[in-house]
Image 1 (cartoon, rainbow, N blue to C red):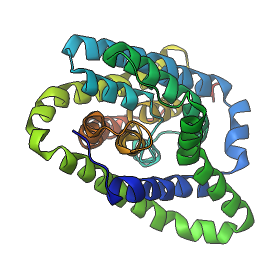
Image 2: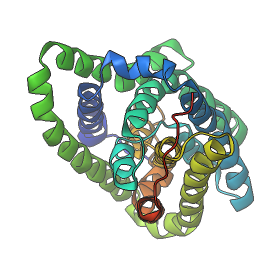
Image 3: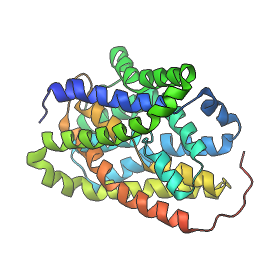
Image 4: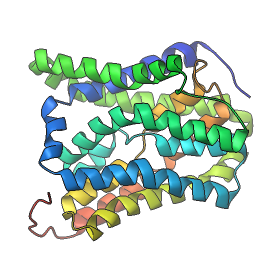
Length: 294
């Protein structure tokens, strides 16, 4: 069912570290301060991301009657913060990329606490036991995986701005390569069962992505958040960090379960279809002048 190897123990943490380092090198302290300028848009998006999406995912998991391990994998995905490709899709769709960067930065911090809580509740509910993250040593590991590289990247940007600017494009390319490689690792480890898993989680992954994108756009619009910020919210909420979810699932020090990585691996592929369609739809709509919502 699971296998520990050099790939999972060494390559995946390094790969994710590089991705999070690149994220950090695109951030500044001002990105966090920007919350004060657009508090409504930020708060609405974070509430959808942290509270609403796990609840929606739980409903889908029960509705599709997933096996316990795949159910935990879906909940792990739902608890993961927005992926780094959300910024790109937001740009293509005409969204507020600055808000995306702010949400990504804040989500990286919040996920250190919320992700272990959601996964622990899922393990208890679906598998009758198991803990991740609330144990102090594992909490530190999640912290190290998510925040330490981001902090180092931000420090590099502050001290060596020109170098950070030059490295942004190579690191973005590396992030895409690592994401593809990580998904490939998860698929390879469960290759004997991949057909059944695709049948089991393909539909729910696609539906969850569509719902995530829709919730991320519709709720801010209902609450009078402007359109560009709503697009940014949609992309941040709809494009989850599947690489982080896969790394936590495969890591021998954390969940150490390849089956739990399958939903994130499938999602990492199918999400490009609805995200691309939504980006095209949003980019084709005329942009009307709106006052920034605060």
